[in-house]
Each structure stands twice: as structure tokens, then as C-alpha cells.
Length: 435
Image 1 (cartoon, rainbow, N blue to C red):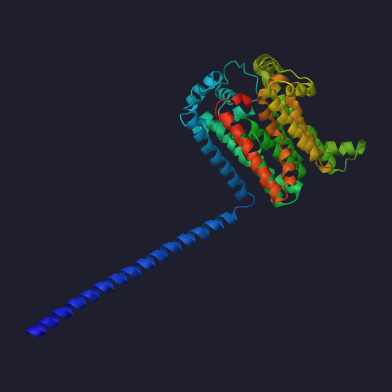
Image 2 (tube, rainbow, N blue to C red; image 1 turned 45 degrees about the vertical axis):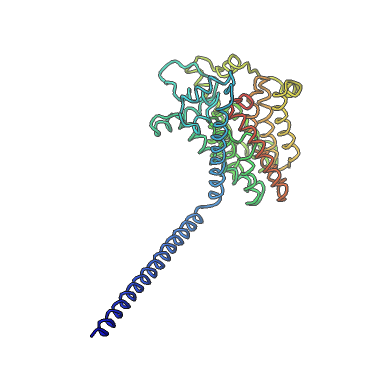
């Protein structure tokens, strides 16, 4: 009897152990199945995401990646530099202290406020001035600040954020149009990718993200040239109308666009040819119409058709003059002015060295973007690096020169370092070096 009980107990212990082992094994198998299921779900999600990305038409994945990469990198660098700069005695410099205080009033978030400096603050003021009161601010074309009014209304009245939204959306669209235009002019997708990358790496390209007109102007210019190459002249005229309302130099873009039209018809001249050009290219007349619209606004609200020119002369001492002596005087002037003017000389040198007959229109456009600011006189030296950013054909030349991987690598690294140095100058409140 005792042996039976002992055997029964032993058997019970073994059954319990076996049961536990079975439960553990079952649990393990269930865990493996669950892990496999989760891995399968993650894999399926990854494949679905990849398929979704592949459905996005080219070049959007590349363009969006480039835009977000530039945005993230500059934001992180900006926050780090500003944090370090806060501990420097005497920062900001005395002549930048007012701007620093105005930045803080715009937003307590420095990744927003750092993009407002000098002219950006004036654009913000223009976007908030009541339209039902006397208007005395005629020193800036009004497309950019006036666009911020409806966008700001959609954002709950935040016109500062609206200005940044407009700048960044225009920057993204500029990259898309730049890619498409480079495909037409350079002939292949790799060259188009290089062009958009160099567009992002131009020395002051960080200003594309600032509360300034640079991204809007370049976007409209690239779009106008792209549709001109596609012979969509009515659309070119509409874009040119707004281009001329965004910056005063926009009016002159009618000249290089007309050269595109002449090239498309083999540079034929004569009465019949001229009538044909007028029939096809009449929308180019919308560019002077855009500037005339701004002049009409000046006459309506200020009683003076030329209120813009008068405001420029009185406020900043700007008068039209021969750009060549201005350039030479800048090279012989104080080191900061000489450095800025050297950038202008470098841009002209690259444009001329990379000239091709088929791209005469782009050479003329680039030269205009350099010489017109210089024709404003020494008063423009402080903003010269900003104005040079409009000369996007420089990036076309660099993209062609960088067909070899080694050249591309060195150009990319050099431009990144130069832009980084200038961005740090911007962040540490010596913005008068750039704007």
C-alpha cells in the first residue's frame, strides 16, 4: 500500500512537471508565433510604405527629402549656435539689440523667431497694417506681405507664421521647378538632382527659409522659365505678373524670357517674324503690367506714381547709377564690403565661364541679378549677398561641372562650409553682413 502511494505520488509529480513543461512550451510557441506575427505586420507596413513612396511621382520624393533635410539641419544648427551665443558677454552687439528684442516679441520659440531679421520685420509690419487707414509705407513691393494676410487668417491671425509658411512652401516649389528645368537644360535626372542640391547649398540659401522674398521670387522665376521652355506663354505671363510684383528686378526678367522665345524660333528677325513673336509672346507684357499695378497702388494710396523710388532714396540713400564703379569702389573699400563684392565677382565669373549659346537667356538673367543690385549704389552692399541668391543659373553651371563624382563631392563640401559660416553670422546677430 505504501509503495502504491509512493508510486502514485511520483506519477502525479511527473504529470504536473510534464504539464508545466507543456504550458511553457505552448507559451513559447505562442510567443514565437506572436513575434512572427508582429514582424510580419511590421514588414507588411514597411512594404506598404515603400509602395506608397513609389506611387509618389518623381521628383517629389527627392525634392521633399532635400527640403526636409535642409530644414532639419539648419534648425538644429541654429538652436545650438544660439544657445552657445547666449553665454557670450556683450551679445547681441549694440546695433542688433533692437532686432533681438523684436524677434523675442514675435515668438518665444527660437526656431521661429530666428528667421526674422530687419527686412523680415518690415514685411511683418506691412502684412499687419490696416488697409482702411492712410498708407505711408512704399519702400517694398507688396506681393509677399499681402499674401500673408489670407494665409494668416487661415492660421488664426498669426501673420508671422504665415510669412514663414509662404517662404517655405515657395522654397519647396522652387526645388521642384528647379529639378524640372534642369532636366530640360541639362538633359538627365542625375544632373537635375545636382542642380537642386546646389540650389540648396548656395552661400546664402538658408535665406530661402527666412521671412524674406527670396524663395517666392526664385520660385516664380524658375516656374516662368520652366513654362517658357515648354512654350506655355500665357502661364509664363501670369507668373511673370506676380514675379514683377514680388521684387523690383522682376520687371527686367521679361528680357531673358524674350530671349527664350527668340531661341525657340531660331533667332529669326524681320516684320513677319516680329508679328509672330508678338502673337505668341504677348503675355510677356504682363511683367511690366505687374510693376505698373504696384505703381498704381502707390498713386492710389500715396498720390505718387513713383513713391517706391522716392522711399528707397529717402530711406536708404538708393539711387540708380553705373554698377561698374560701384563694384570697383566696393573692392577697394573696407574689408566687409570687399568680401561681399568678391562674391558678386565670383558669381559673374562662374556665369561667364559656364556660358553656352543655348543658355544665353540664363546668362543674361544671372548678370541682371548681379548688376541691378550693384546699380543701386554702395547702400546695397549690406544686402548684396542676399540679392545674389536670385542668380540661380550659377547652380546650373555647377551642376554641369560636377558630372565627375570627385568634383561633385568637393563642391558640395565647400559650399556647405561657406553657407554654414554665413549662417552662423546670421544667427549671431551680425546680420548686416548678409541683409
